[in-house]
Length: 110
Image 1 (cartoon, helix red, strand yellow):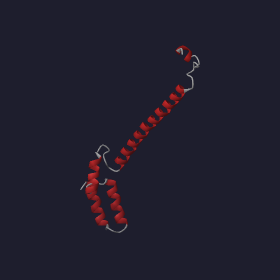
Image 2 (cartoon, rainbow, N blue to C red; image 1 turned 90 degrees about the vertical axis):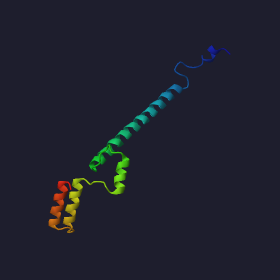
Image 3 (cartoon, rainbow, N blue to C red; image 1 turned 135 degrees about the horizontal axis):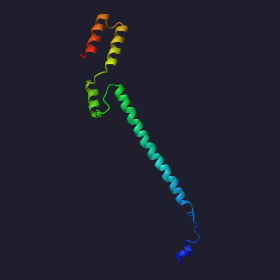
Image 4 (cartoon, rainbow, N blue to C red; image 1 turned 120 degrees about the horizontal axis):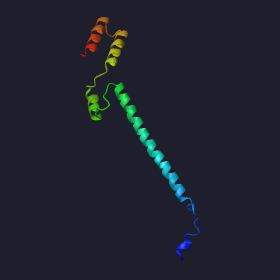
């Protein structure tokens, strides 16, 4: 059989649509990869913001944060400590004098 005649029956537009299907599949896969990158970026920014709100440096390695959490050495943000003191005073667990002294120490950084 002559090779020239074998390809005469194939229309000039690509035949059975294989190339059209290939480009559609390529576009879908590219869109999914791009969506994955966007999701990972969004997750990283969201995690960094949550870490900052908790008083943790977002660039601190996870192993250091885990070690602090296990040992209990994790320092609480000043705002959190003051809120706890106010709550203890409001519930009557500590007196007004104790509340004042504890707030002064917390504000001084002790």
